[in-house]
Length: 482
Image (cartoon, rainbow, N blue to C red; front, side, top):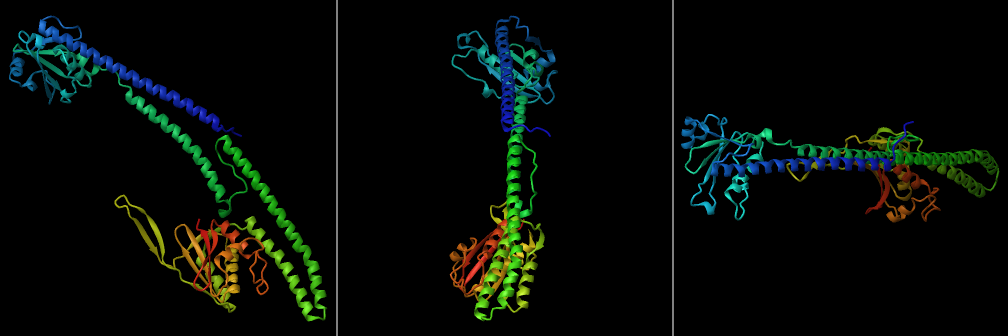
């Protein structure tokens, strides 16, 4: 047998895994940010050195080279046709940057004009920070920082004042190959995958508990197994084992109760038969009738208790059946013996639809009342429940009317009587075992009829309730359609 991990172990592993994945994602993100900042800082320093080199006529830094343009390219650059020079990228996008000379050198200094040719984009010069007392060299450094922030291979042309144009070869700091590897997407992907894995484990664990709860909740309604074997963590296995033990104890108790009642019923059969024979010899007819009624009452109580216990034991296997056909056959049996029982056609079945993405209103569907209503149920138990309700309606009223209503979730069998003096509150109280009304002297019964119906309704995931009507009382037996 495979040993299941406990929730404590799984939770500890998830916390450790989340900590490791989160730490790695943060490190990748921080490392990439630091690498890009260092790359941009190198470009910033290279831009400052370039400006001073151009202004003073000195040699720029090693990572930046200055090359004179050919006479043909010089003419094109002087005319502003930067896309026509020989080194221009195909369909180049031109960004013009003008860097004014420092105010202290305005008499001797000259502005620096830069034309940046990129195959991909026009640089957003508005992103270049303008600080107070910012020097021209610092402005050139910020331009280089901006260009280095994008992975592209630009061609940079520059002109100091009215001097000839020249090309700046800064591939070692500006081109895409000089940019560091960006691991931030990997950090995001790692965080997303770790979060997805953790959520998957948590949702699977929750689903295992929910699945067992649903199976246990619908065990009696759909005829669940005698015991359960479900995958899951150690805690769930312990719960399943405890539930299996409880179900076994409950099953044994019900079996013992049924065996005792069955034995009592069998053992009472012989003395009851003798009593009937001896009662028949009593010459006093009034006394004889009273004794026979007592004997019938005694045996009837035992049979009612046995019926209730069998309903609790859930011995009948559920199957798919037509509820309309079952009720129609029960009503027909009563009509054959002259009982005033009718089957009334129900109203249209309204099924509420879901909201559409194009409208917030819910749609509706109508089904005809003669539509076959199928349920997953136990036909013998349902027949007993409907029969008990019809018998009550005939006992306490003059006639019984049966109707069937249904929607997508449940089916409701409605039995209405006429002339009943009992109220809905009175009938609700009579659903307890051995509870009878005030007219017990004139109406036969043992106080278990409604108790059996309520047990059968609960067995089918439904309920039994009563409503007052203008002419009598209405009993509603709700059944989950399964």
